[in-house]
Image: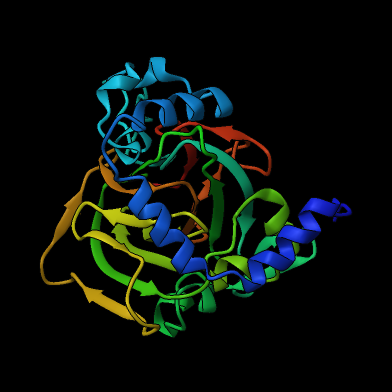
Length: 287
C-alpha cells in the first residue's frame, strides 16, 4: 500500500466520522433541483471530469433539466455493441477493473493485503454464499465521467434481491486500499440471477454521494430507512432479462461486483487497472 498524502489522511478520518447518509440525501436533493443553475453545474462537471458528451444520446447539456438527468444519460443507440455468443459474458458497465479473479475459500480480494468474505458481502445469506465459495469475481469501479447505467452480462432470470444497509465510504482507489472490508461495510444491493453459466450475482455498492441506486424492476432502492436487511423473492414471477438489457443505474457513481460460478473464465482484459466498456466481452464458459 502506498503512503497516504496529508489530504488523504484527513479524508480517511473524516469518512469515519461524517454522517454518510445525511450528506448523500443533501446530494440527492441538489441533483434534482431545476433552474438556471443546472446548466453551469453540468458544464463544470463535463470540463472537470472529461465527460465525452459525443457518446450521449443527447449531447447538448442544455437539454437536461436536472443534474441527475445528465448523470444517468443514455448513450447513442449501438455505440456499445453487446458481445455476441450465448457462452460469452458482456461487461455490465463502463469503468475500471479494481480487482478480479478466483474466490478462494469464500474470500474476495479487495486490494493488496485486504479482503472480505462472500458471506458478509451477501448480508449473511449462507445458501447464496455457498454457491460462490470457489467461483469468480470481478470488481468494476465507475468513475464520475463514466456511463452510469448497468446492463445484463447474460440472459438471466431474476430470482432474489437482498438490500444490506451500511456505511457509504468513498470507493475511490485509495480508500479501497485503506479501509478494511469496505465493500462488505458499505450499503449494497445484491441481485441474484439464474443464467446459462449457473448462478450469478451483481452487487451494486453504494458510496458517499450515491444518492440512490435503482433497478428496472423495483425503482429506487437506496437509501433506505433503518438498518434491517431486506429480501425480495422473485422466484415465482419469472423476471427474465436479456443480455445487454438495462438492469439498473447509479444516481452518482460507485462500484459493481460481479460473482459467478467456477466454470466462468475471465478474459485477460478483466484484471486490475484495465478500462472496460459496457457490452464488450469479459469472460466465457463451456456449453
